Image 1: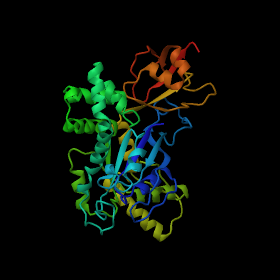
Image 2 (image 1 turned 135 degrees about the vertical axis):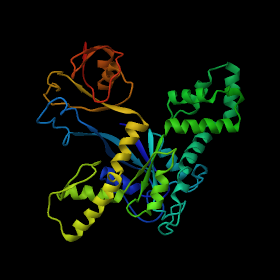
Image 3 (image 1 turned 90 degrees about the vertical axis):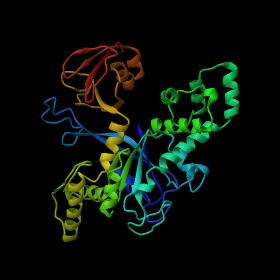
Length: 391
């Protein structure tokens, strides 16, 4: 399952975001290091279901009002403080927990109510812009430390056998959550012979690895209490992807929906009241509605979706066994939805369904057009595909 990490300084609202996205009960408190061990939960990306495009009037039964929710893993890690890569705070545990994350949602305290180490200082007394770059730096320095382990010995071996530079680096970065292709991409970007690298080259390489292996989106959290100027300054950052967020508002909506008081799907820009509300509930929900109108929603689902579909460039594919009825053998309409990298081929999808089907792949059929597709045909987002194999 695809994994996305939630990271940031202590007391920035990571655990609130995590609960809002997963409905998993976690400790939430107004002091640093409430989270000690990483929390793991299932969240979802949201995508349009093809059932309506296919003319299935009764719906597929696997979506909600034409929206499909596909599971991912969300990891809420311990708070990070400056110099975490040197072991300060809970730095080592934090960085280890992020190894499996393909992307990172950096949760910022947009309210300016906590200092760089997560201590409460009162609303507006800390500039959240100053917190933007430190997470990138800490992860880069962590990767740099891994690179420098036994570096002299590695270079002697590299020069002695005349091996490929990327192979030496791939072996060194094994287990750090960096793929072989990401190492090769960074090596190409360096444009300098590995044998001549100095400390500044290693750091630049680590920064490239961070950018390729842990791309980030900024969740400007606590927007419901943040000074407007703080949110404005964060949104004006040209080099960052920033989304205003209120994890607390999302939790309130999810709880109200669960209690049958409102009709709401994560990622909606508004909600519909369907139950009896008291005055306090009405006032609270109307305050949330005003916030949602201003920013287009609570931001929680938007962060997850943009991390998966924009930063990581995943698409959604729907394998079926009957291309005429869009069903599996049991007659279930659009039974599965797979997240796969853009550029995936028909054969890649066959392997994703089952290794035996990938090995015995013959061809595929586009269920929408009924066209036959070869093994190297590049699939598009929302494709409904039948795989034909000898198995």
